[in-house]
Length: 428
Ligand SMILES: NC(=O)c1ccc[n+]([C@@H]2O[C@H](COP(=O)([O-])OP(=O)(O)OC[C@H]3O[C@@H](n4cnc5c(N)ncnc54)[C@H](OP(=O)(O)O)[C@@H]3O)[C@@H](O)[C@H]2O)c1
Image (cartoon, rainbow, N blue to C red; front, side, top):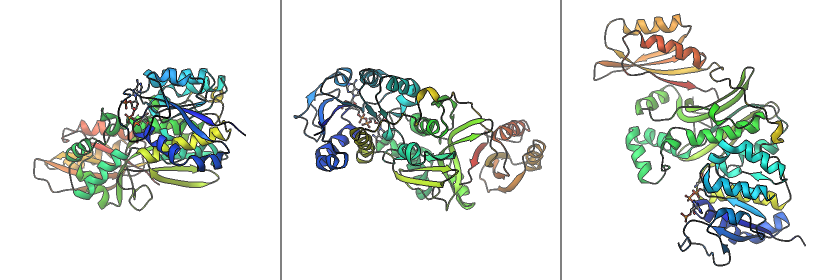
């Protein structure tokens, strides 16, 4: 009879408690599926005597996550503390050095230290699993690494920050300005302590960098992700995009181009009738396109106790079954340093300009864009109460780099008010 697989769980917050509940409620089912009992040996958190709504008395307690990770009776270290460095990294390294498998939900740690941790895991014959780190309950790492392993991936896209999707869909549904919905999200506890992690695209950028590493066989390159947050999206942008058949999402896109890997996380217009365009509220979506399979769409809860714990326990089940797949789908030593090719692929753009209300202003802007090789597909001027007139332009496909040069020229005309807003339109 195979001995039980004993877990050491560091972190008893939202995700840690979810994991405890699954182990406590689904023990027999998990044993039947994996052929091995899964038990909890020991746990760790900052505050020992807090009531967490789940029984803890059967488990040993450690104040120090590193001590937990190296206990003799812990076979698998489950890291649910958070933070890119500090105790999460120290305990993960301690477990891997001791040859113990690690399961983590920590995208920040992996986005920054993923390569070093993968090398450490492989050097010690231990597995390092992180399904919960990307899009919560959606098994997208498993899909890319295993089910789609035979595909050359042409593009990976994702709406992977539920808070941003909540803010954008609520602005649209209720006609509310960004600032008001942002404060509402803060009051509801949806935002990280540092909100720029969410609304600045950093959290979602971490996730995209992890997916891109697996899809393209490169070392995680978070610094190579072009980031733009949702802070400058106005209710007018949302309405006008809708008028033209689009919705605005904080969309991550990674693709391989002849010049290298493009990675971006930015507010993007997507067709309203596409699966990405129909996404509502805090739900996440990951879209993977492969040369053999075509398009695969995965949709589900990207955060929360149950969904995130589900992903953690999926990884634990694989370890119980004896699977040890390289963390990024191929040996860490074979992962190439990413060649960055940002702003390489042409796409249509949505531009919002604020023009001085004077004769010939629009013509001057159109001329400058034309001279820079940016051709205009559609253009609309809207009613306006003040001195500046909002003008909306949809371009034919151009590279973001060419557009940036053109907009610098537009700013030099002296007829433009506030900085233009430029959003990509993604063909999905
Ligand atoms: N929440 C989600 O929906 C979600 C989704 C996907 C991924 N994740 C990731 O999952 C991880 C955990 O997230 P969470 O939402 O569960 O966080 P959380 O609710 O803030 O819980 C963090 C836990 O870690 C413990 N902790 C923090 N520092 C510690 C230390 N130095 N020593 C011992 N324990 C320490 C805390 O102890 P106390 O309880 O005593 O303070 C708490 O139990 C993060 O990496 C997060 O990014 C979360």
